[in-house]
Image (cartoon, each protein chain N blue to C red):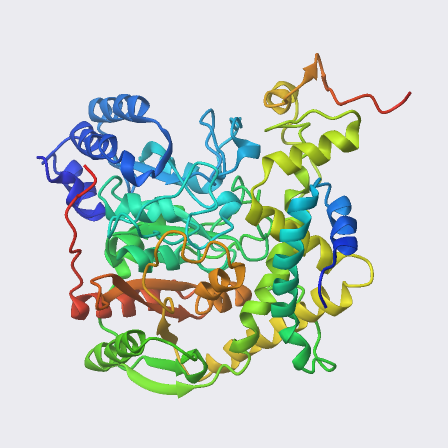
Length: 95
Length: 484
């Protein structure tokens, strides 16, 4: 299957990446060739195969439910492009 | 003492301990080289002043308990370093200063090392040539028009050019082993779960592993020992004993069974690669190993599987870059527009391609056909290895299908770039340890590496076999520092 412009516009919206028309044309070509490449897998019958869910044959460790950190608001906000006292600031979302 | 920078890591560690030279002398020697290395473009951030002051402090204190006491080390700019800018080679993180330290780099510092600088890499570790970095191409010391491989290209070039005594990279589909092969250095991707992923900028979480890049196998064993271990902060790291890889290292590999997978003899593979592979077989035979032909029948599907799984995980991991919490932020009239513009401006072309492919294969209506299908094939690839390891102790293959290529050669054709990882990707998909060891030169005098893939958590065996190859191949670097 090829990725046409309509599909590309849809997935770029899902991925929250804006694309101009010129970019759409070149990306549509690139992505179509990648999709053609990965469709090689269709040649393989996997009806009897279970999908892999973990590559390590070990169960994940559980830990006690206790607070070990916290009070690091300043650190968390430190790299924010725009902040106001204790909050991240984003463009207005409610009119 | 001007030649300290040419010493191996082990020689530097023991020299500092025996007081043949001071940590400050060592550090100055690497800084001197690094300052003359602008043409190679390996550093994104240097910490030379801080390194000198750490070295001075070390020399005063003289604490030799750690495996890396008094050693300056530059690392790939994918490891978060507290109060030191960490960019992942991306515009979107160009101003990010972590307030915490990755576990793997923290392990280095706990062993007495200190930071020399942050090394260039492909953007978010997505690339095989270091051409996708926002901070520009890295140059291979083997030639000013050559790529160093990727994504740990800055690490590989810095190491080969004597700008750091050793380094660490990350490997999602070959990003340690391929650049190691292209620069005549040793690079090891540990078993998935051997090293903590905490604090490493995430690309594809089920594939990513940090690992050592060094001048020889002995150094590799030492550095692996220093960085490995369970970490409660990474739930996929495994709580199993870390071996004393360096003290157990031996070239006695007599009786070990080595598998040669016929599927790795790919179409159009240059004769030189085939010859190198045969030489590797002869080296191991000479060392007393037993060679067995094996089959890994699903090898031909590995790359396609990888280019579904890795972008899918990347699209999810990179959703965090939204211009709100950290990094670059673009203007927008509303929240969605701000997100879309930030990500459009902040990510480079290859990263966009992978996010979009990942989004596509996970999107409604396509999930089963692509992502689920790939996870099934991944299971088949993994069981190929499980079966093979019933009969053999390790698997020998070439590291890469070619030697280092020219800058720009593959940049406009994603598929031909992806084919570079054809021999390295299966170990990531299966979570297995794998190492690239330099074993010879091609007709243009460019280095070529051999890869050994081991059983899960059996890094020792592939290190031992690499040592046996290293002793016989007698690889020596053959370039002068033309850039300084």
